[in-house]
Amino acid sequence: MATTTSKQNVRRAKRGGLEKQNIKILYLFLVPAVVLTFIFAYLPMFSNYIAFLDYDFNKGWFGFGSEFVGFDNFAKFLTDDKFYKLIGRTLLYSITMMVATFPAPLIFALLLNELRGDRFKKVVQTTSYIPHFVSWVTVAGLFYMFLTVDPTGIINNIRQMFDPAAERISYMQDAKNFLPVLVISEMWKETGWGTILYLAALTSIDPQQYEAAQVDGASRWQRLIYITLPGLVPTMCILLIFSLSGLLATNFDQVFNLQNKMIRMETDTIGVYTYYQGLVSGQYSYSAAVGLFQGVISFILIMATNYTTKRLSNVGII
Image 1 (spheres, rainbow, N blue to C red):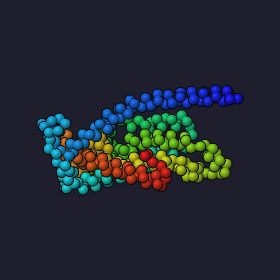
Image 2 (cartoon, rainbow, N blue to C red):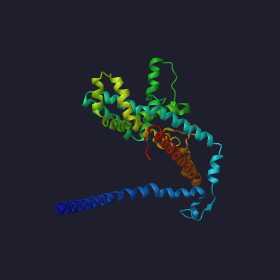
Image 3 (tube, one colour):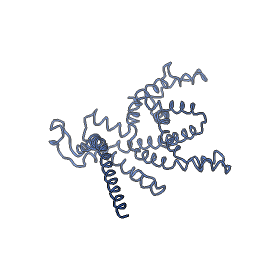
Image 4 (tube, helix red, strand yellow):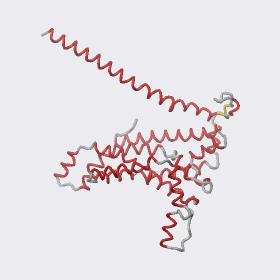
């Protein structure tokens, strides 16, 4: 009996040793990802130190010979006449787009989930992903073509079908139309792609819950309210955290490509302003300070949102 127990202990020890060895091998697979993340995500962060310099390219590539000015660049931005306009406009664009576009993937995913024909469902689902792979340059070109005063302007053509005397309008040259264009273009491009996470979350809901509810006489609407939506709450919370963290970081590609010279001064956001101050005007330290300010605020927002959602629904990313 004692011999049998001893053999079992030896086998367990060997099995434990093999498991530890396998775990070490699995950790080795992480090394390339950690190295690449450090090189491309963390290493560039050190360049933010030029925000505290009066950076002069001629005094050394890395700015070691440039004068240290502390928080002067931050003070310059905070006291700039454009500061409140940029903050207000960026928040207006971000909040409006979040309110308008955040529910769209959820609603679309719920509608797709209700479709019965699998082949038709897959066709619709795949087709809805395609706009995500279209570049913002192409999207901007399409919007300019549809909204122009030229004969190719579909919107003006439709207006004149109902009212031939209607004056043709150049929508893209009026700053008042910029926000609706941002919202519509974002919804068209990203709604289908945004459904991926919701559709994945829908597959994780236990089908027995639906069957039990159906047996109890629950309607489709009741199953949606009491089973489907609660099952999607964790996914919604995580996506909300990501959305709120980007309140001061509008999509640069989208804003930059949909702008034009006629409306640029009235539609600049912090991201586009940083680009023009840094790469166009050559104020590298100032633009770095603006970008760092934006990054710090975004980090605070993501931590605050994560803390709030954890307290309310026990769901978070940290």
